[in-house]
Length: 328
Image (cartoon, rainbow, N blue to C red; front, top):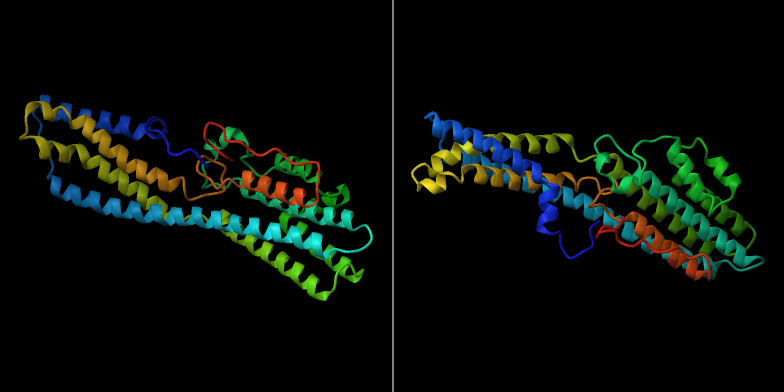
């Protein structure tokens, strides 16, 4: 996620420069052939403008839908923040008895392990995502042993090696960790560390965390419908292909110097439409690990800090800082 006040114009242009360059070159070829070989390539601008209006409305629909996916993802992780803090506070205040400090730490550390596993799972790539643009190759682009090894290394900081081994071969480790947390809470209830009412409250929080996980997985595993994404890009191509022909008609009766603006105007209009399409395209998948994602790594570290400070743990993680304006 970009956290500075705004993208600079040059950052935006560099990110999306190729439509402008190709559109300008394409417009120059059409204009040069028409002007110097006296071939009438002009087409009425009116119908082309109507196509442009239709494409603009469609891109607006796509961008709005893509933004909804990103904003929903942020609200889900806002819920994870709230439920995590509540779980930490309840674990500390509810657990009373022998070795209570160790048990509180165990519960909180297992919760951090769940959050770590979920974060890793959400960063795994899908074939419809922009894996080639992941931030500094921080996230493994395929589901493979590298993912398991990296995740297991982080989990070893929070749960026992025995519990990690029990997770081997499981398709959804985050789900299994929450299951283990639920089993442990029942064990503590049976040992009278808290009564039924408090056990029900803690169990309700486990249910809320499962809900948050399921909502995150819904966005991750179900892409923005491909029919809408595909039609948007092809409609943009069709419209931009007609732009130079319409510009010749629109400005052929103007002053001579204006005519020479045809290639530039063709590239500019092409750039604007493809920029709108690209913004929507890169907002569809808020967990893919690219420039405009929900910063779940930073959010996770913030939650971990809050929970560890609740139990006065000396091992407080360093916060993730922005890198050239980007927060992961």
